Image (cartoon, rainbow, N blue to C red):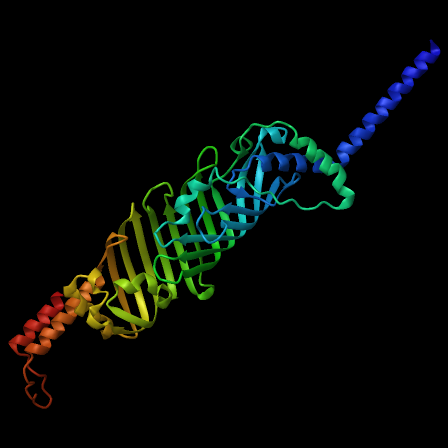
Length: 409
């Protein structure tokens, strides 16, 4: 009986020792266990249009880092990805006691994102076609190699977690804030519809905010908005600030754009204005406000610019004048020629994207009216009468009428 009791005691001691060893192993690898289990669960439930290299948790500081995130382009576009982001840092709080209860992301910072907006020759735009990629591609996960001394226990845990059946969606696991802070980003526009060779524009060193409206299951982008600033084509002297909102669910382009620009080279945008311009611009810079609103392909635009150093020539046969009212073209050209150093030029755009119509703005209209009065004055003014020495010249009745017209306009 005594031997039997001693045997039971030894079994209990061994069992306790095993518990202590197990507890020590769990404690030793507690962060790795959480890291591997959390990463595996999230990776397995990512939307199919998203690829990720690593997801790393900093439990003590409640920070999650997503490394090398990609958003796939629809088929038919030149680049595999619509967007790539070097690193996303998310601050979060736990919904419960463990990862299975989910987390709520309270802040997102995207470091060095590169977004590629592309328009094809037939007018299709990749950001408008994101719905087509949602269910087509299985996410590709690139795994980093573990150091030999850490690989075995961590990989065992990972293989165990991957065998656990898990049917919850990514939206059940993670609640996202809709706002992303962008640091040192870049937007690349590649337009194949405006010229034979693809026209490329970049906005670099972007800092701002991106607001994404997502569906409940995070599988559809319902709205996009952005506010920020950056450099045009990487030139720090060419600054641009913007406020943009876009409805990617609309069949035709539905978008609101507000730009404040400073000292930007006009020539970079030649493919967009040349078809609708009665002049060939060889040199010039502009600053001011640009407003482009698109409502299912219809344009509403009001723009006020200060042009500096404008050098241009009139197109032969007034090519490009078809988008303007024919009667105002000579007066607009005279106004542009009147102040080659610096002038204010405002204009409106209405109509559709395929057939836009251009109109002079209030400032240009007033300037044209003043030029018309000056022209009338030149035609009506007769020979000047010699004024007596020390006396002011006497104005004729016609000159008085011309002065009155000038004051009126």
